Length: 91
Image (cartoon, rainbow, N blue to C red):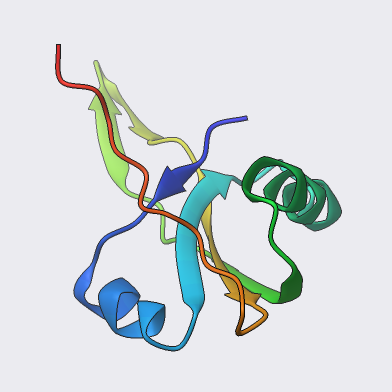
């Protein structure tokens, strides 16, 4: 399961409210994501909201295709918990 933490202007604003934004595959179930976040980060999730991102067109030779579909999840944690920032290793 691929989980990308987002650092957009609205996402940074939501961090002050103890809400975290992730992009996930659209086929992932909400309950699985909630369970995975509880186990991986050892936090208590109060609520989860999601919405599908708009599709972007991509030309594949003569036909028009679409890029991979993602959903944006907004996860609200209990006030005493927080998630440390995820960083990629630079190699």
